[in-house]
Image 1 (cartoon, protein in one colour):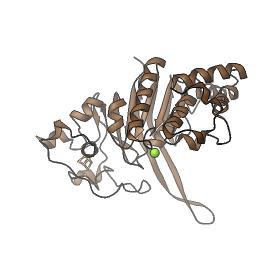
Image 2 (tube, rainbow, N blue to C red; image 1 turned 30 degrees about the horizontal axis):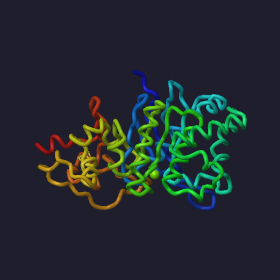
Image 3 (cartoon, rainbow, N blue to C red; image 1 turned 60 degrees about the vertical axis):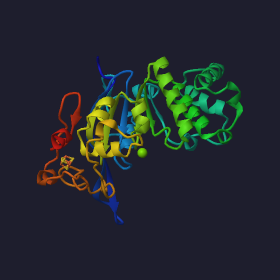
Image 4 (cartoon, rainbow, N blue to C red; image 1 turned 90 degrees about the vertical axis):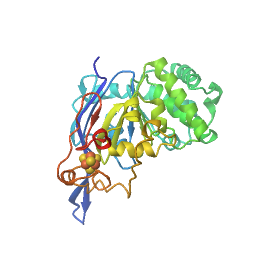
Length: 325
Ligand code: SF4
Ligand code: MG
């Protein structure tokens, strides 16, 4: 099977400017040499503490950011190289849902108009066709079409996220980047929105990238999980592998923070991590995790571990299995 999307050595650096002449004094390395493939119909969870480059990676996948280096290839096409006309067409296939849908909804517009907007802007439908589509999509996301005439402030958090999802669905996307879509919601509402996303995926053959800082929601929705730290991929494997045989110390730390105790880890001593994520403007040399890793050795401070392995990949000089025997 061919990947729907390929990320190859993606880098996104933001210049740090200083002084009256705005001299570049360094770079924030938000994403640093990230590669992975996403297959049609799967959900890839992107996990890590805030500031690990998850959102920037997600935004790059739908070309809300242009890479500093590397490629994002969607259905065989390099997003940085296609014409504006082609990009306009692809825009309909690549959508993003944010944590706070309210901030992206114009408060002075009715929901019906907000949902119809992209269809009309892309000249994909007449006003009456768009209205019909709005009714249909509202129903699909579990909101009555009666809601069309209401304004964003009249909806609860969970309902607003349903509207955010409806908005992404209006253009029949193939890939949806879900950037912490449930993080701001109550736990009971989280489950409802996750179930909706799962149902929609099956019905509409959607592919998701699901971004979160913890493993809870990600475990429930993802087929595979990509663990990021300071702009780099630390580990990438199926959800089952990540939970049952984590190889990277950072993954194990994230698992320890997971609310439900992991039976496979009971006989392991708990690894604790101290301190905050270092600044991506000044990432540690060698393995970027070495300043917080309980297993760090001299080589970790010098040499960047490459992502190795087949299927289950890990970037660590001393993967856990070998540490724990
Ligand atoms: Fe820890 Fe070294 Fe592995 Fe980095 S390479 S995670 S510092 S053991
Ligand atoms: Mg983020």
